[in-house]
Amino acid sequence: MLSIRTLSKSFGGVTAVDECSFDIARGSITGLIGPNGAGKTTLFNIAAGFLKPDSGRILLDGQDITALSPHERFHLGLVRTFQLPQTFQRMTVRENLMVAPPEQSGENLFATWFLPWKVAAEEKRVREKADEVLDFLEIPHVADELAGNLSGGQKKLLELGRCLMTDAKMVLLDEPGAGVNPTLMVKLTAMIRRLNEERGFTVCIIEHDMDVITELCDPVVCMSQGAVIAHGSMADIRANEDVLEAYLGGGRAAAGRGGRAT
Amino acid sequence: MEWAGLINYGVFMLTLAGIYAVMTLGLNLQWGFTGQFNIGIAGFFAAGAYASAILTTPPSADHLGGFDMPIAVGLLGAVLVSGVLALLVGLVTLNLRTDYLAIATIGIAEIVRLFLKNEDWLTNGVRGVAEIPKALSTTPLDPALADLLVVLAALAVVYGLLERGRRSPWGRVLRAIRESEPGTQASGKNVFAFRIQAFVLGSMAMGLSGALYAHFTGFISPEAFDPEFITFLVWVMLIAGGSANNRGAVLGAMAIWAVWAGTEFLTGKLPAEFTTQAGALRIFLIGVLVQGILLWRPEGLLPERQDGKKRG
Image 1 (cartoon, each protein chain N blue to C red):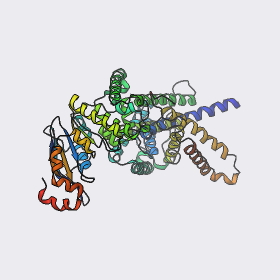
Image 2 (tube, rainbow over the protein chains, first blue to last red; image 1 turned 90 degrees about the horizontal axis):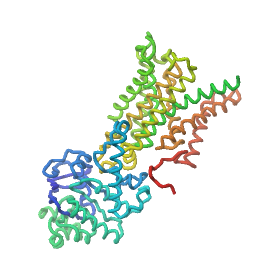
Image 3 (cartoon, rainbow over the protein chains, first blue to last red; image 1 turned 135 degrees about the horizontal axis):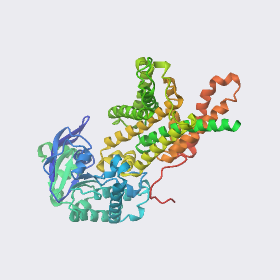
Image 4 (tube, chains in turn blue, green; image 1 turned 45 degrees about the horizontal axis):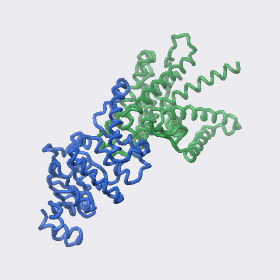
């Protein structure tokens, strides 16, 4: 579904992503793990078009999307969430969701001026869709609340809700569980699984909670210092020497990586 | 006689307030909804004023044209010229973040002012453009009343279009951009295209406002486009009235214009030896007012409304 081909990206002297390559299989929930600073979020930013890579390519369904802007990738079905929720604070929760659906004719100013009935009919559908998503997320009671007034966990749900408003094929979830309490985390995990099974979203998820990764993800990709150091089932990852070194012994891992990088 | 004088004064003041309200609505689209920090308002206002003046004045040896066209053409020309100017400026600057955009727009307003001042062939330089025709001059209406009618009609049209835009998915995307640009991109919107639209449309309103002003006064020169009295006042009007609320923008324009006129009345009472400082004192008083508003009512007289949001 999504292919990362020898991507590299440096910021000044720091190589955040270093000749990174892997494929995400259609229909899978792929986990992306690694210590802080491994380049996971940078990789997401590149994949979603928010950063330009220094070299390498990204393919979606075999199509080269490296040169496309974020909104063009969105329309091809590649949707992302943010680690720090990018909610629209001074807009209601429902409005936050209503922004997302593509191809709303009301986004054309002339249509809003001269075809108001067409826009109104579409608005009704978009609104209903937003309410369905709020039901799915189990937060219908905050629909008319300003997003800025939500709790951290509810904002996380709203981030996820944005993906639900679209017909995404591939969603990139950047730490959906960070800062979320354990009860909500269980709910969130179940939601992500349902999205994968019922709506056919292919998912790639960055997460530090290994229980979540173990429960949801197969395969798992592990990055360290910008490179992929392991790729396989969670059992393989747990047994992998490089992964253990990356997490536990930073110095030794860095020294040994050159020879053993996959 | 006393009453007639008062009514005339009221009509005169309301006309000017209406002209400012059109500009404030334009700024509200840019700042209130989209979060664009435009402090080059005077530049777009001036461009519109000169465009309409040159199009509608009788042929003159002093400046380009005039082309003796109907005022409607002049207004349309003003909207187009200010729109094209905004498009060119926007294509270059709109990738800049808020504060950098502010610096860029103030520079552009200065360029426009100096251009109008120095390009004699086009604008007659500091001597200005005279004989700008009045609106509805062929009708039996009182000229002052005719001006007011035209300004209020323009204000109603601009308000209607922008308010409908605000309530639409289009306006929703603009507000989303104001709140989070990455979030809007992740919602699949072409942020740059929306920003350009808001900037151009807002600047068109400013240009239209300039044209209305030109036909109202009948004479314009670069001096009339001092950023102190245009950009500054319009910002105060928007902040006082309520950013991101179109009704607030109109109310703010009316209220601040009344206060502004009031300060003139006040400074008129000053002893003769202080008259030279009166202008600065008026600005100072308005500045104090802004401070007060920011401290005690930062959301303005009419804050942003959330359609469908329950108050509580």
